[in-house]
Length: 198
Image (cartoon, rainbow, N blue to C red; front, side, top):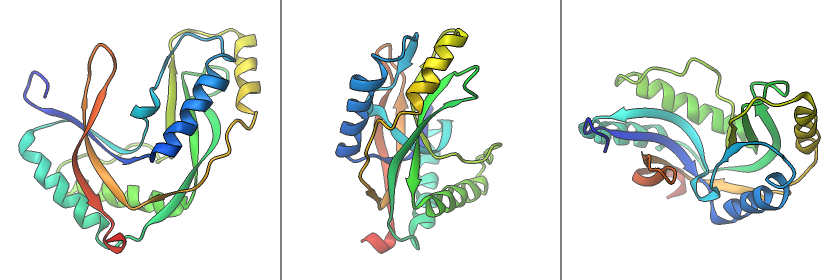
């Protein structure tokens, strides 16, 4: 918990170990040594497909959030996703975040996100202001980059680095995120399993 006694939390899909291994190979063997940039790289074990960031939540709200997530997942069937192409936010001329996209049953994923967003709005959590773009953040760039460096990033992004196998999604997780000097530590607070997966 933070100083105010609140729990910094978010809702996400946890990645299976084989996908984390693919991300580790991508980062260590292909990206870090080909991109000459000052950046904060995400640890593969901390990569999750975030569906909604909740911020600092009072402990007494956790059960209400959990019950809401269970109500969202009770009629959902498992679906399949895979890692996709690399990209940057906001654009290649001024890259700040390097990410990898998500492909597969993305319509089911977007529907899940929208249901979570609308149901949580009913219990006091504001809706997202921007459209949901399924992705995993790989690094946050900490410097202004030259035109040639941006060109290099573009070349690297256009190379097909990863052959990702599909993974099945059958639950969503409410995570606690504790910020530490060595990076965030994520731990499960609750799990909502898709009813049709049980």
